[in-house]
Image 1 (tube, one colour):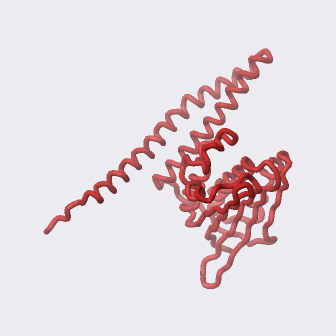
Image 2 (cartoon, rainbow, N blue to C red):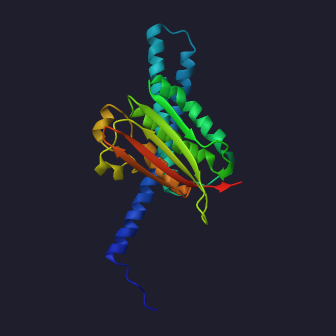
Length: 250
């Protein structure tokens, strides 16, 4: 039997995939290793906070706890991202009351929007049916998108919209939009925003700190949900993130 010779292009493809998997596994391993001492640091800082401290010492402990929580959030995001990239995430669909699902998310974010003197807008169809979907993963995506909208908007509004689309002869899907009136994104940067570790304009990190992991994770979760995510934006005029998530209706 004639053996096929592996071309340089194939070899490069195999090597690139191997390197990518190695990097993802490395990120996962390091993140797990960092989490263990971080939990100890946070635990002892919390115990220290419960002791008798003067005002300055109490402020120092609060800074430790606040910074530690931010670092744990980053570690958690890295673990989520590496699991998604390594295809180690399974779907766990449940029967979900769609109106209750959206209301729970909105009740968490609405006070934050109002506290920033922004207008909260919720547009959801009434009396939506039950749907079978992985609500935990979809909630994570919407939380990332709403957090981003809140972070990048200083005046105007943050809006969450949801409709159930029933195309004839095709599977039903949720049409979800998160809209804001924030700083917007340059058109040539839109294609980068769903790449992990990217922000549309790295100069924004000075005003809006963040590693850009949220949108990268969201994109991977939507892929697992067999859906689609896209974005449109007008620089200085806000952004709109659109989700299309297939669901089974009951």
